Picture (cartoon, rainbow, N blue to C red):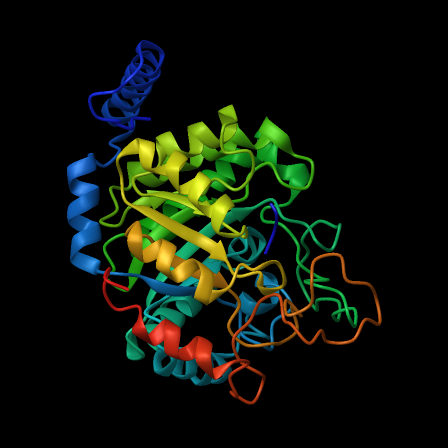
Length: 366
């Protein structure tokens, strides 16, 4: 979708590297003691029990953004059931799904009923769900709103994607008490639900020009979620400048380290090296950008070698139009090489060979 430490080297470790690792250890100890971050041992037990994750970021083809996906009038369980059936047959066992704060604010009980319905459909197809609370991505360049959503702009990638809760609200502390209720309500309702695999608290914090201004809300979200004592792990993925203080903090706070990787093999390996310094399981929660060589054929062997579960962007070509390339213009035709997505709207695979690769990713010996 969007563009986007403790690492033991063995006997040859420089004094500077040791100091950095000790600093990270102290930071993790503070997080563990104050916010009940999972221990490394608990994280690895969880990871071993669930096995290799083969996932995708998911909205039904009938939704232009997460608001449209979750509002009562446009929630579409029939399409979701059909598409997750295709996902199951393709070999997927998890989906990463965005929530919208405004929908909860308007109709909290209704949203929870729809989440429960979604989880039931996914579980029927042997698919676990990762749920996301906040997102700074604003492809549409506007704040989120309730009601009928604007139609997609022909030829434009993700043309009506809006953030959650909205960029202006992120730094408005008067909104935070309600954000706290939102996180605690959802995690409190589903924190012991086996159908929820993991919580991704915030997608790409700092995107859309927000920078480090989003970090306080990230930190608060971890605290709020952990206060409900969920049975599932928490994460927020690093997505830009993995050596920055923002990315370091996201990885240090997470029970399971996660990242976005739209790079070629060299870039992916560099990001993975940084993520593995925290000695926790690692997930890639966004990938697949075919036109630059970020393909299943290229990244699945890397993920297998490093024991990394993954979520490509997109399942079925639909109203988000994420088969278009970033930077596409109004009226551009569908490209021969799709950026994201796996199926045409009728369920035909974009590339049957990709389906075979997904289905083969059942162990770490790829």
